[in-house]
Length: 549
Image (cartoon, rainbow, N blue to C red):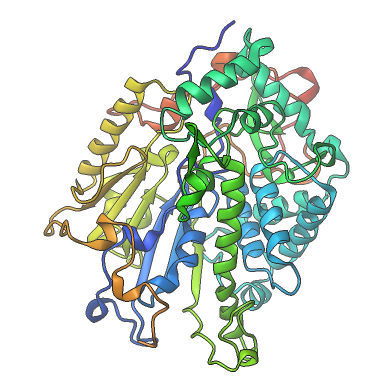
């Protein structure tokens, strides 16, 4: 059996990393209007952003890192995912990004992030960090008061009680509640996914990976991804090899998710790896850079690889994120200063003003169709971001949550290697149809993009094509220096995270038609057509009674 191109099975059913470069959400949002948006208590304009399927927090991190280049604003990020494991990864990633620099240096934080975020296997020190953080978070989630005290930027108030319990179970699994690698045998699961995906081409997998890289990713704008790093990720799941290859042998439990599969008419719970095995995590931080020297070529070949560019970009991101340790000072530690800031009392100069606090609100799974019923969300958001795997949730009801003059940015399927060119064009056309039906009109300003589709809320005057926040994607000139004081409902085959005691997954030998195609996952059925349910076969060794969810 040969898996045809365009099947979409390499995309998987759970997203763990973004398939588009990180963007500054302030550059995509309407300009600041202090008269209409000023908060009466804090006298600072607010930016409310709703993100569907952002999965890894890259857009939030970049927005916070570049906040000093824009007028001061209070950020409220509302994140809606289709599984709680993605919510848990968000929390872990932000906890790492905001870690006290005195406890963890910049290089250690950057390397830890890269491994946890993009590697299937971890080094023992990184795995120990994940266990420690997961244990801490597992104790904080059921205690709202302690959570608000230690993580003031995090809001879980919109989650249902059962979702908070399931989130706690995810952290406990990461913390080692089920001992040993047998609880999540990542290498075996990865190889099983590859065999199912490639079929008879498995023995020629290096040639397949070279074809996908050179004839698809390179042609679509990701030329900096090197053959060696792409082959290594396709074979082992290790995208960023920062140490000797023998050091990576501990399964990355943050990439585990639970599903309900059909076995002889019964619903069987299994834990496995259901994510991307085709594109990789190189696109999010590795194909663009503010430092143009990283993108130079010599004799037609890029000088830097995507892995090296990712390391640099993440390190700079975390360096700029150091200022956001100040929101914790607002909780009472007024003596805390920015880590590494030159403008500190020790240097004899006034410290830069602390940035406004920000909040990340996690919404209940499957609430995309009901948000407009709540007055606190209707017309609330200046910007709506929709990932390519959540496009089918774009509806007039969701559009009602966007304020007049608000913007919509939709991630396109440019870097999904399973899709042919005609499928990419069909996907873009479908996005335009859904956006217009939801009350948005195409935004004609700025450069055309194959990665994102941009719209504005119809019914208002079209935004000026000279708006620097949209056309150039850069802050207005007067703010190029730090400013002065002035879901997708879960499908029936996807479970809530498995609680300890559920059976560990084995490599599931699924048939090629047992996974929904990418087009079924990312492009909604027309009319009243219902999504096609999956019929999966589970080997006998994974059979177990369905756990109580």
